[in-house]
Amino acid sequence: MAKYDAVIVGGGHNGLVTAAYLARAGRKVLVLERRELVGGCSVTEEIWPGYRVSTAAYLTSLLQERIVRELELPRYGYRVDAKDPAFFSAFPDGRHFFMWQDRAKTLAEIAKFSHHDAEVYPAYEDLLERISQVVEGLLLTTPPNFPPRTGMDFVDYLKLVGRMRGLGAGDVVALVKIFTQSAADFLDEWFESEQVKVTLATDGVIGANGGPRSPGTAYILLHHCMGGVAGHRGLWGFVRGGMGAVAEAMAASARAKGVSIRVNAAVAKVTVRSGRAQGVVLETGEEIEAAMVASNLDPKVTFLRLLDAGDLEPDFVAAIRHFRIEGTSCKINLALNGLPEFTAYPGTRPGAPPGAAGPHHRATMHICPSIEYVERAWDDAKYGRASERPLLELTIPTMYDPSLAPAGKHIMGIFLQYAPYTLREGTWDDLREPFGDRVIALIEEYAPNIRRIIEHRQVLSPLDLERRFGITGGNIFHGEMSLDQMFVMRPVAGWARYRTPVKGLFLCGSGAHPGGGVMGAPGFNCAREMLKRG
Ligand SMILES: Cc1cc2nc3c(=O)[nH]c(=O)nc-3n(C[C@H](O)[C@H](O)[C@H](O)COP(=O)(O)OP(=O)(O)OC[C@H]3O[C@@H](n4cnc5c(N)ncnc54)[C@H](O)[C@@H]3O)c2cc1C
Image 1: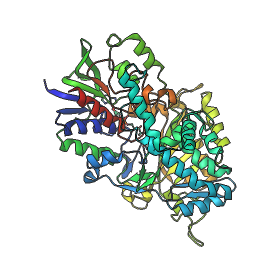
Image 2 (image 1 turned 90 degrees about the vertical axis):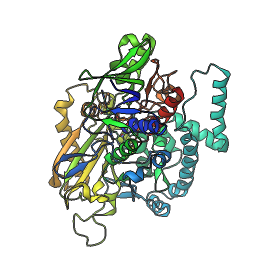
Image 3 (image 1 turned 135 degrees about the horizontal axis):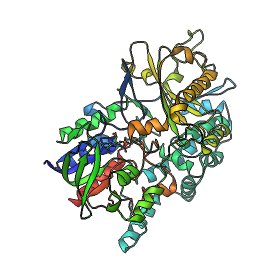
Image 4 (image 1 turned 90 degrees about the horizontal axis):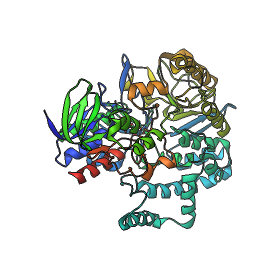
């Protein structure tokens, strides 16, 4: 029987990061992945011949610079094209709004809707920059013990407060507000234009179980600014080769350090003896011994399925059962034989032929005209219905990397809110395609040619996301990113330091601090804690 220093259950990007850092420190590591490919939610799959689709995650920004550098990801093929323009919003009255990498161009766009908003926007961006820098410092940090018990625990909290030293009094107030307010309330304090506010507010509800008026969504807005590409804070980019190229680069880096990776190797159980993890058992019955085990799976699967109830205290099991993990996001992937023609942006230049590529095709294209529109979309989900008129984010990665599709063809990703995992009536197996039709009809109101250019369509409801990627409830972050499930409380109070009540078993996925997104931070932090153990 092979004996490893560590077995990583799950080859998502976080599992690969943990594995690579452990191997870098000389440990013998094995990664076991259930699917036929690594990457988890960060994958590229050829779902139709010639179309290589980022089936789940589609943009990068949060991936920590330190991890990119230390794992030498560019050497293994990781390349990012920063989006420019970053956003394009189409409005029903035929107007449009762009946000560019160039601040001056963005300000000119904002001024189309409000001179006041154009004047305050630089100060808003600067504030987010200052706050993000403070919060960003926590991403690669192990949360302190909670509740604090010893003198050293209190010292850790004082150190946290010390991180705010560079902030002025107004910034500290803003920081508290950002952790507690709704995205809409936060933005209302700055801006007057509905178009500007809703374009910025979308980041506050992506992956959230709440609307722009739900307290806590301001933090999700900040979470999406917690990185950047091409030196621009909060800017997102397309990965060459799709999001699978992130995981492939990590896997190549890990292998180069000696990590063994097995795909088609689903883990059924973590073996526990005398309160200590001893290894794992695969679904085939194969047993693998290891001194330590790290789970890249979400907290519900890790603790409620891979372990026996007797391995854990009832209080801990109850806390994990209460961990909220229902998703409200849906992903629709399209293969297109042309480009959508938006009535709000008919052509790049006068006389441009219909269907010509324009700057808007290079942006994240929003269909969500107002805060009220998004709030109403959430109202539906709150009562167990898929939004009648959902918030849509459209992206066309082939505008940056044409190799992802056959010549002249395109891929479009539609990420949308809200599609609640638990439906009051019907099932996603019945609703999936009618809902897909509804989304296409909605896009048609803005880009009337869309139906004609679709060659293939894949609708991934939260149930499909759960089935395909193994994420409970289809929650894209491995659990809600609400204040009571963040930092010292992620996944549950008392267990936010990557260790678990089972000795030698660690949590290295997005269900641990600092949460979801293709960030690598939970995997990095977990490796550090495992190395302290042995
Ligand atoms: C539709 C969608 C869109 C998203 N868009 C973005 C985006 O654009 N940008 C961004 O930054 N983030 C995005 N996210 C969020 C981000 O992709 C995830 O939070 C992140 O990838 C999770 O990484 P992870 O390594 O923690 O876990 P996962 O990616 O979930 O990896 C867990 C791995 O464990 C494997 N596994 C499960 N069960 C077993 C088992 N029993 N045995 C062995 N292996 C098992 C899974 O197959 C998977 O490979 C999106 C997510 C989704 C679902």
